[in-house]
Every structure is written in C-alpha cells, then in structure tokens.
Length: 368
Ligand SMILES: C[S@@+](CC[C@H](N)C(=O)[O-])C[C@H]1O[C@@H](n2cnc3c(N)ncnc32)[C@H](O)[C@@H]1O
Image (cartoon, rainbow, N blue to C red; front, side, top):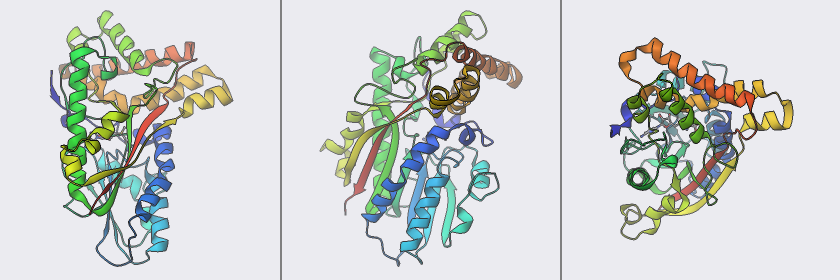
C-alpha cells in the first residue's frame, strides 16, 4: 500500500533519540570542519543580513548540539556583529518541544544557544522535500542521516521490511521514489540558497563496496529485523497483513544516484545552478560494538546497550505496521517482545552484530 510518510514519521520522543544515538552524534561532530570550510569559502563579511542556517531532519537536536556550538563560536570570533539565524526542521510529529528544551539548556546536555549573542533559533515542520526558508536566504544547509526518508512508500515490500531486501519491480519502485525525492530536496535547497551558499549533507546510502547501515560485513541488521518480524507473523503474534504493511519509508541511494542530478544537463537541479563540490563515502564504526569488542567483552551488556540505538529510529516503522485497533498497550507489548527477541539474540551470539554507519557526504554550492 502506498503511504504518505509525513503522517507517521518521527524518531522516538522525550529525548530517547539523542540519548541512544551516540554514533549519529559522532558523525555530525566530525562534520564540523567540513561545515566551517564551506562557510569560509563564502567569504562572508561582518555586515549584511542574517547568515541563514538550516538543520534539516534535526530530530530532537541533541546529536547536532556540539557541532552547532563549535560552528557558531568559531564564526562569532571572525564576525562579531553579524546575526546568525538557525532554522531547525523536521516533520510535524517530531518532538519539537524536546528540541527546544535541549537547545536552550533545559536538559543535562551541554547547550550552546544562550552563550552566543545575536543568534536567532527557530523551527519549521515543513518537509525537506519542499522549500522551508525564503528564496536566497540560506547560506549553509546542513542535514545528517535524514534524506533517505522518502515522502511516500511506493508499495509494500514482500518478505522484507526494507528496500535493501527487495528485488525487481519493488526495488525499482523505491529507487525511483528515492530519485524523485532527492531531486525535490535539492531543487528546494537551490531555491533557498543565496549565491555562493553551500549544502553539507551526510546522507545514509550504499557505498562503493555495497555496504550500508548495519550491513558492513557481519550480521545484517535489516535482514535480522525482517526475520524476527516474520517470526512474530509465523507465531501468530502479528497478522500477515501487518507484516506486509511494515515497510521502512526509506530509499538508500548509491553514490551514482546521489551525483546524478548534478551531472545530468537536463536535470532541474543542474539547470538551477547547484553544483557538486565534493562527494565521498564515510564509514563510522558502531560505538556499542567497539566498546564490546575492544573493551568490556560482556555480551549481555552489549545487547542491552545496543538495542536502544536501533530502536530510537526503527520503532515508529514497526508501530506503524500494526493495526491501531489493537490499542496502545497491546502494541507496546508486541514491540517490546520484538526488540526483546533481538536483544536475546545479540546476548546469545554477539559476534558480527554492529550498526556501523555508511554515509555519502555531499557538499554543493549555488552558483551566482
Ligand atoms: C535518523 S533521524 C536523524 C536526526 C539527526 N539529523 C541525526 O543525524 O542524528 C532522521 C530525521 O529525519 C526526519 N525526517 C524524515 N523525513 C523528513 C522530511 N521529509 N522532512 C523533514 N524531516 C524528515 C525524521 O523525522 C527524523 O527526525
């Protein structure tokens, strides 16, 4: 069944997302020099309108705190007077209230906003497949680990829950949706960017070796999800219809697919003057597997610490597959059982389990 994903997409709320997602935070913190270099290349002076920033698909904002703090502090040294305007963006069901508490220092995370003068923070719930800020006002558009979410699931995925496990027409339908949404994402950004403005995007995708999130040589995470969910269907805990209705609203693109709109002369992206400056892939090791392998060697602890990072972003998809008529308590029970099965499997046979991150880093400039 095709589905508009903006009606259910959100990370697990109440701060769970950023507490559990150390790896995503490491990726963003590691992007700090790339963001600063992209700003440096713009030669921005101390006068003029506010410098516009976006953090697209920000979730609760906790994973990008360190990066924005470092970027604004470094930029403020060079530009003591100029206003900075950061727009956090996500979908309407995102926990924006938690985002504001995190950013304004009302949690135990180290916030940056109160320490930087002339910094204006706002939020938008407009999808990143559409324009978010007014034309020509964006100097630095940032997004991490978000552009793989597609605006609609084109069809159900038989025998799997993710397009990486799909074949033939089904795989092609997700790739086509991914291509349409990537073009829409870039076209909207091109309109927003000021001349010389940059995009710095860390996108989940498939690298040159065919690796992707949780599929870097050991036990494949999405195959494990599909097998355990199938197990619940076989045991009669969920229905066949619910299994079929469980589809990650995601398209993992290859490096070629990310580059295509910049290279094709007939693409509206290329025609709009958006140019690729850098493209490449990065591999970030799963911090929970690293702690287990290199340090504590306790499989029960590994399983207990590892499952929440999977759960922080995958749970909404499994919940969305279940019939809402079951009621919240029964749904919670099924979901707990599912992740409990995963945890038990990791605790019993930990070797090979890991959620390593594979990103395709795209830096682009608006000519002008
Ligand atoms: C895995 S989280 C990444 C959060 C954060 N950027 C990070 O790297 O830790 C992906 C986020 O993208 C958001 N998202 C998905 N589709 C979106 C869309 N069309 N427009 C804006 N945000 C979207 C989700 O709601 C979610 O909060």
